[in-house]
Image 1 (cartoon, rainbow, N blue to C red):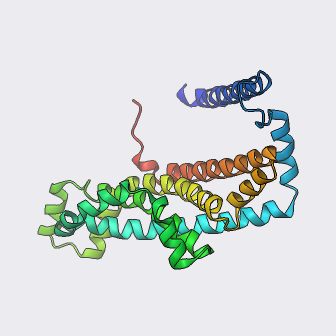
Image 2: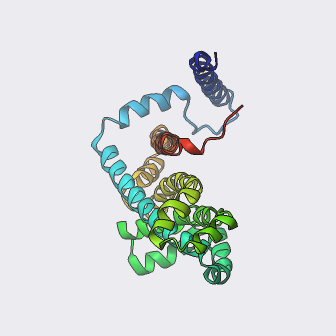
Image 3: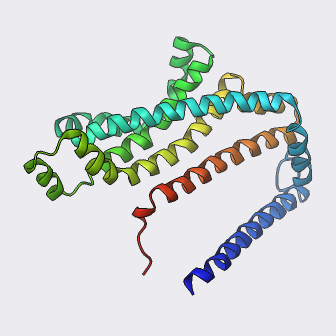
Length: 260
């Protein structure tokens, strides 16, 4: 019975989401027509028209490509750095104690404050944008990797020590499976931050990308186009998060807890 009810539950959830979206759009249009929002705020029909218009232009795809490259490159670097350092900090106790303050400070530090320094050192370049993405997106992966590596049962650690299990086998069979659910969560959060950081840097520095297109649309007072570019930035982040969520569900199916 539980199996036959699953499609019905999915359709119900989808319908609820669609209704919620429609209600939000209706409220937005009402607020525009009633003057609750500033006069420059475009209505829903204008934004929808701009979405279909900008997607047919070459400038959009070029800007989207720049944003995609910087976000993807920065995210992959963040994952590599965060996982390696996180597992080391989490498993080597002296390193964990000495790095605790740095980790707490780094995760709370506003990355945007480093932009003038990065601009001075690297200039308004793609490398600077990737560096800023890494500085913003590495912390969720790092913290989750640390937490996952410390999840190990002390009894398992003692058993591995007693039986002198080789380090490589211990890493593959003990440490990594235990930490992987935590790492997956950090990777998913990091992906969303990478996209936001890339667009934010483009807005502030005018490096080519979706963020620069948003600024140019604002300067030209094409607010409908600006909202259209914002829409694509948001939908891009949503698609990435959804794909990673599905991948995590398939790869870590063994980690799901039963509802019984």
